[in-house]
Length: 412
Image 1 (cartoon, rainbow, N blue to C red):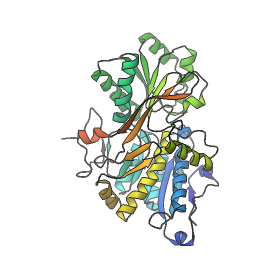
Image 2 (cartoon, rainbow, N blue to C red):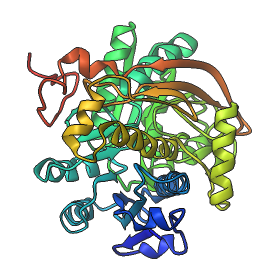
Image 3 (cartoon, rainbow, N blue to C red):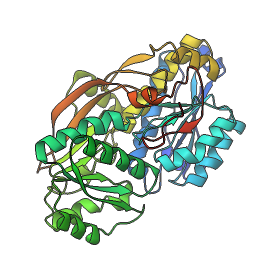
Image 4 (cartoon, one colour):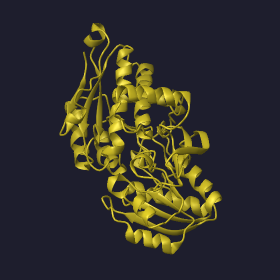
C-alpha cells in the first residue's frame, strides 16, 4: 500500500486522506513520488486546498487503475502556509531529501518565483497549476493555468464593446498584479480605450474607502479587479455598500476564490470573469468531474479552475511518463516537444504547447448575476498560449529559465 505522506507544519489538514494502490503487485513496485507544495493555511488557502484534493483524487484514480507503468503514485504533501520562505525550504526538501520525481507547487506568482530558481538549480520538474500573468520560459516548469493572451485578449475587448472604453484597474501589488495590469493597459490602448486609473494594492490590505472614492471620481465604464487573497476580497462588499454599481472584469475572481459563493448578493453583480473552469459549467464532462470530486470530498465548498488544472496535470504527467517510459525530465521534455500531449479535460480538450510548455484552454466568460447565479455569455474554445512562442520563447531549442513581459520580451 502506498499513501499520502503528510509533511510540514499544519499537515494535519489532510488527516485521513490516503492514496491507495490496487493489489499487492502494484504495492510492491517502487512508487513514483509527487511533491505537493500548496497553501493549506494562510491568506490564499481558500483557493488552494481544492488543488491538493484534486491531486489526491487523480492519484487515487490512477492507482486504482494500475498506477503509472505499474508503479503507484505516492504524494508527499507540505503545507506552505502562504509563505514564500516555506516554498523555498520545502522545495529543497522535497527534491533533495524526499527525491520527488515531479512537484506540483504554488498559488501566487511570488511563491512560484521564490521556488523556481531552486527547481532550476536542482534540475527538477515542477507543475504550476495556476492562472497567472504569463511569461515564464523555463524547461523545468510546466504550466497548466491560463495566461493573459487567453484571458485578457478575450475579456477586455468584450467588456469595452459592451460597456465602454474608459477603464480603471485595481491590482494586487506584486508581480502578478503589475504584469497583468500591463497587459490590460496594452489591450485597452490597442482597442482605442482610455485608462481612467490604475491602483496597486499591497497584499493584506482590506480597507478600500480611498480606492472607492478614486473610482467614483474617475467615472470609468468598468473596473478591472485583479485582487488576490482573503483580505483584498473585502473590496467587493465595500464597493457594493458605497453604491459603486459598476461592471467588473477579472481574470482571477470567482474562478479562484468563488467570491460569488462567499459574499452576499448583490456584491458581485455584473462581475465578468474569463476562466477555464468553474463548477457551474453545464457540460457532461464537467458534471462527471464534479460528481467524482464531491463524492470523495463532500465538504469541498467549491471546485475552482485551479482544482481542475491540478487534476488534469496529474493525468498529463501520467501520459508523458508512459510515453517517455521514464520519469527523467529530459525524456519527458522530448515527449512535450512532439506537440501532441493532449487530453479531454473537464473543461474540454487541452494540449501542451511545446515551445512554452503552457497549456491551451477553453475560455468561459462567466457572468455573475444580481442573485450571484452564473451564466456564460461567451465561450472561446481552444485558445492557445501563443504569446511566448510568438515573442521568441522556444524551449525545444533553448532554455533561458527566465520570465518575460510585454515590455521585456525574449531577446531576438
